[in-house]
Length: 124
Image (cartoon, rainbow, N blue to C red; front, top):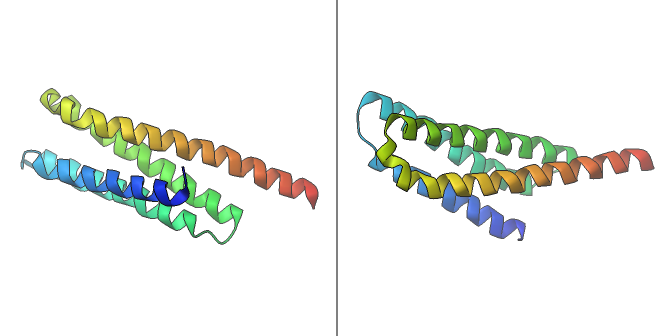
């Protein structure tokens, strides 16, 4: 998968998160969760985009770490909303699965870039 395809995947996932959050109840706790998850999901997507425009391998690594954290936070909020309202699970599961796949790809990329950085240090 190319970085452009992954960039599109991140953005589509973030848009889907916003779409589902708009459908949640309007009580205070759901508004709070909606705000949090929309921030973390959009942050994961925009930081992945930023990582693709890296200035160096270290910059790429640092931005991917932010993506990892934001994906993990988004997954937490998805779990949390299902814990509050189990009937939302059927709508949340596909977004959680996609977040988990994106997280796996991100973690693998972090591992690869760390090896690259370590190899470059040995060569100098």
